Image (tube, rainbow, N blue to C red):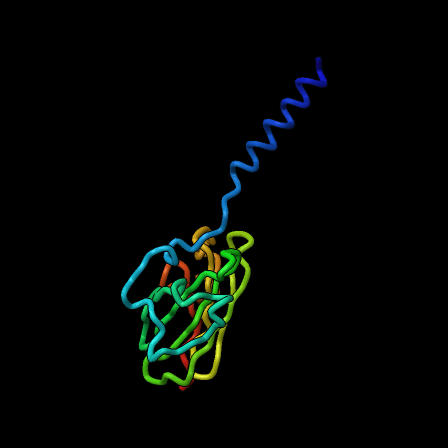
Length: 146
């Protein structure tokens, strides 16, 4: 009898733990907007990896547009940082969404270092380290070196 109670307790605990785990997400990538297209027909990612229909303009901040996208398989996310004054200068990167965390860091000449993160990431953890939130899924640090 003790074994049955113990086994039932283990099964219940396992169900409870799996019920508490959430799939990492960036809910802003689920919303459509007319401004979601990259400017000037720019193509950053191969269509079979990151379809153009998955790209979303997340925020425009201090003359820079920050785009996010889900990968075609839905397991990753990408960020592209495009200064509005120079269409030839941009950076982009992708990473896996395996848990609530920072997904990808990008930086480049003339572009502030940028981090894309999931909805569940504790943004306050980075705020004390000089990072500035500009969107619930994006923080930047420093100023663009122009």
